[in-house]
Length: 451
Image 1: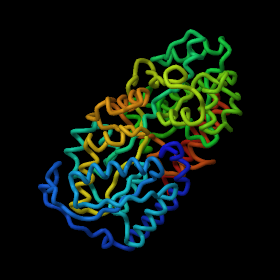
Image 2: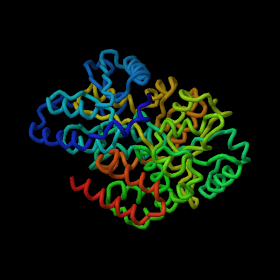
Image 3: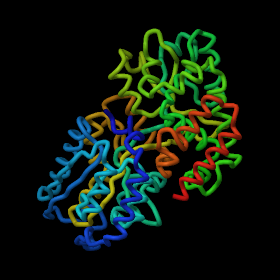
């Protein structure tokens, strides 16, 4: 199971857990995080001597093949720093709870890879995290400013996006497109025209899996980034503008062009609202297909290869999320795991520095199931041609933003049955109610941010 396929379901209790953590940390002070701070000479790659010794603990959601792959990354680190031992533990679905309990008890891990910038920011605000400003020069040399910004809060670097996902991809049934005589669109206008042609050829254009709501938020975010731009995307993410803003109206009107015709959705609007994400993928790649395409991230490929008989290039492929009104054709909405530091030490700094290098990312990239936002990772290390395209599109993009809902309070952005997930599901069922949707989003956001 990939890290990101079920990433939203893992944090349904996030708001409660972090709220408890903040209270506990405030009461406990910072003695549990006391650590040795290395000299200023360690602030650049290679500044920490290879003779440095020590032991590190690290946790992330990664398990199974992902954990095995990361052990190979650790092995690469040990070729440079043979005297530093890194013990990795999978936190799985319970990572936020595990971390909050560990911090409250005074025994946090040295490092952790968090799947949400919002979680990173809340840990940083509580004083649980240590800034990694020492790695800024390495991060700036290997990542675009917008990617570096994902790990930045209150003017300090707290996180490094190590394992990433390109969420600006649309996966399609190659034979269905060929039979209809359409090619992958590059613009929104072409996408809508292709959908009409596909429908006329006898294939339903879209498959949507919205039983939990998060795939719809991903569609909204891609549309909003392209219609409102980066600055407005960041403002809405941080609730600096209301959800009743005209820019949201514009994005919802574009979404309604996808959801507005029930016959263009597999199962219709009501059926799409009760379809789970894996099924929304397999619906596109059955024989005969139940739909021609599905909007979702690069982790769709693992569902296709594990659950269908479709073959890459001849059976399935993807195209980048199209531009809208000439804007955002190469912009990427991303997800991923962000490396953070709870305890500062020369050994921890050495490992963080290493993870920011292309050499560390290359190890996992060669093993598959991994995308890096590191712009200096050679495309040739990705053995899967389709995955290579998605990964390099992410690394090369000048504008990369993190999933908006994952940056917001979980009560609003990441909880089944409420907030964005429920409101966008309601919108799917009734895409003509744009004003009501905006008012509901505004009310839910206001309530969540007050907490």
